Length: 119
Image 1: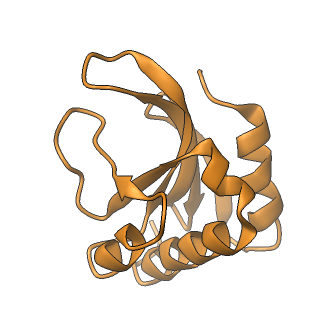
Image 2 (image 1 turned 30 degrees about the vertical axis):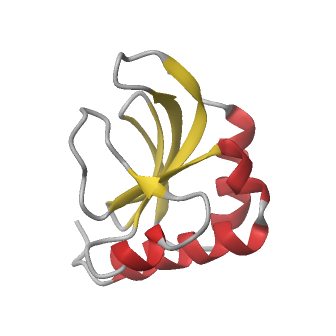
């Protein structure tokens, strides 16, 4: 799996006290789930030619929080296959160093995951 372990640790530290969080390798990276639903994760970002352009993070904020998440500086649409994935956003690794922005995005993702029935 190709992802930055240091970025994964940032999420581990943020989510350590949240009940129902688990780690799962998926999408070529590491995802954190809440009650079985994808919450956030780390991965290697690639351009349209599938060339690695750097490490990054993704957040599953859901359709209702999507526009709010996109309004956060540094956030963009997630597109693994060249197609937009509504409800999922991504950012460069540097954004994770900004506690306020990261915590805001994690809160949006947690809110969405908590709105879904447990798997």
